[in-house]
Amino acid sequence: MALGLASRLGVFESCSIALLGIEDWQFRRPLLIGDTVRCRVEILDTRLTSKGDAGILRRRLTLLNQREEDIQAGEIGLMVGLRPSG
Image (cartoon, rainbow, N blue to C red; front, top):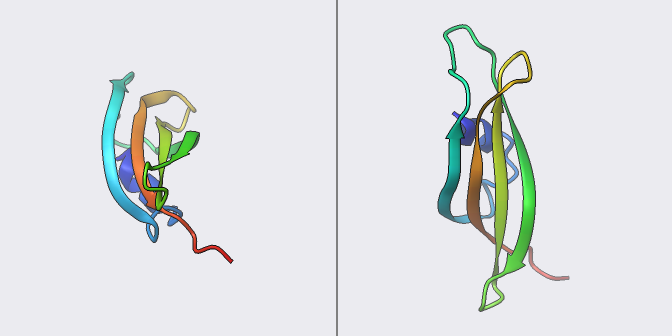
């Protein structure tokens, strides 16, 4: 659910190269029928790959319900292409 909502932002779609893994994913509360959910995306850090032609984003995704309660959360690494210089 969280990845689907985050992808609708359209921010990572044109530059994504590879999903690197999901870490420390926690299911904190149940997601109930009729709940309205949203996803908060936080960039925790960035770094260049060893070749320097791509970057690694460490992101924290948090799925929230209509009461702003955390339902699920975890870190998802993503490799992205760099913008052309100039």
